[in-house]
Length: 116
Image (cartoon, rainbow, N blue to C red; front, side, top):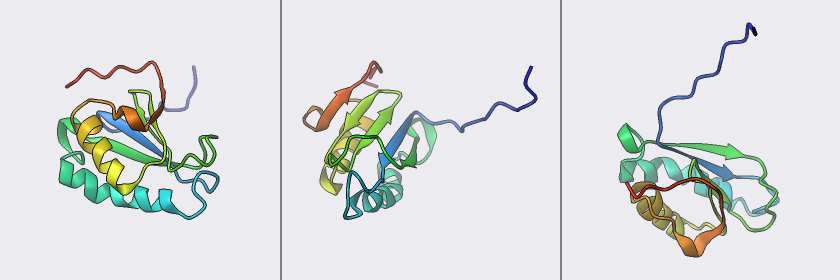
């Protein structure tokens, strides 16, 4: 038995992974998008309670030049070319409404969206 304590992650409904690596967006657009999420999540009610969404920066998804790239877990939905305007669509339609924004998806994993 390992003496290492199992890590603990706080309660949240979804986890948004945002690639801020320079291979996807050389102009820093992904970092700007990530930095805007706190206010956007707060306005949509995603910063606390049952719909809380955790957000994390990652350095590379190896999906070069398709960025900003983000992945919604546990849904397994990968979005590409995310702008501030279509981030608002992703927040309202997917993170709040439970419906994938199909025209922005470049990969859909085995996750399930239950249409809350």
